[in-house]
Amino acid sequence: MDLDALDTFAKIAEAGSLTAAAKLHGLPKSSLSLKLRQLEADLDMPLFVREGRGLALTDAGTELLAHTQRILDACDGARSALAAMRDTVAGTLRIASTGEFGTAFNAQMLYAFRQLYPLVKLELVFISPTVLFAPDRLQSFDVIVSWDDPGDEGQAGERISSATFGLFASPAYLDAAGCPTHPDALQAHRGILYRRGTGLQSWRLKRGAEAVELLPRCDFSSNDYWTVKYFAVAGEGIVYLPTFFADIECERGHLVALMPEWQSEEKWIYIRIPQVNNASRKTRAFVDFCKDYFSPGYGFRGPRYYVETVLDTASDQEGTDR
Image (tube, rainbow, N blue to C red; front, top):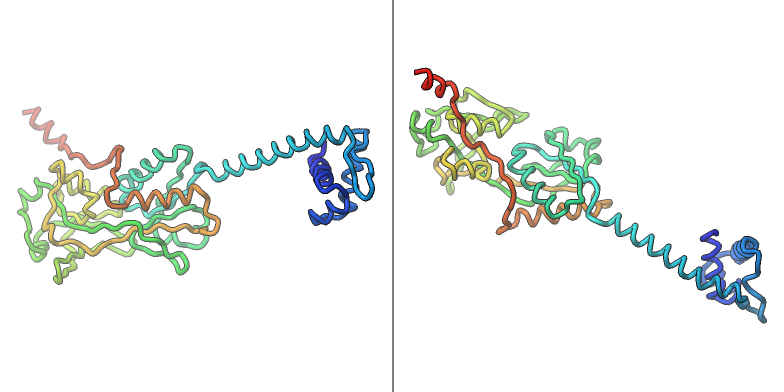
C-alpha cells in the first residue's frame, strides 16, 4: 500500500473535501484526486461518498482512517528515532594533532573522552603544522588540536589550555656536572634539544622582567619530545620541557626541576573545527569535553604514561661478571 496515497487519504478526510485539502496543504487538487482514485482502485472499494459540496467517509473509509493514522504515526516515530540516532554521540571522530607530547597529552585526554562516550570511535593522526593547515587537508578531519599555532586565516582556533616550559635533568647528571642556579651557568652544561621543522628549539626563559634565550652545547637532538626526555632521564644532559610533561618523572625522582623560577612564556593549546557549519554532535561533544578537561579542578582517572627509569644493563652485567 502506497504511503503517499494513505497520507493523501488522511488529508482529504481531515479537510472534508478535495478543494479544502488542496488549499490547506498547498497541493494541486488533481494530484490529490489521482492519489485517491489509485488507492480506491488498489482496495477495490470506495472510501468517500459525495455529501453536498463535501465528502463523507464510507464504512470502509472510516475503518481505513483508523489504521492510516496508526501507520502514519508509526512512520513519524521511525523518522524521529532515526534522527535521534543521527544526533547521538556516536560514530567515528577524526582528530588531527600536532604530536609533540603524544601519549602524555592526546592519549590521556582521548582515553578520558572514551570513558564518557564509549560509542565514539576515534581516529587520531599526528601531523606537522606545515601539512596540517594545508587547505586540502583541513576537510579530512572533524577536529584539530595544535600547540601554539592559530592556523591559516579563517581557521583561528579556540584556546583551551596552556603550558610553560622549564629545565630538567636527572640526579645522576647533576651529581656529575653540578646544578646550575642561573641561566649564565647553562653554557657550561650539555643540552638535549628538541628539533623543529625550522631548526633547533632554543631555550626561552624569563623571571619577572628578566628574559634570556640560548642554545646550549648539544650532543643529541630529536624531533620527538619523548626521546629527548628519555635521554634526560638517562643522564645525558639538561632538557627543556613543559612542566606537565615532566611531572611524574619529577615526583618519582627520575628528573629534577632546575631553576623553577625561570620559565618560558605560556605556550597555548588550540582546538578548531574545520567544518564548523556542519559540526556533528560528536564533534561538539568533544570540544565541550576538552574545555572541561582543561578547566581548573578536573580530575583525570586513568592510566598515565611516563619514562620510569633507565637501567644500564651493561653495568649490571659487569657487576654480575665480577
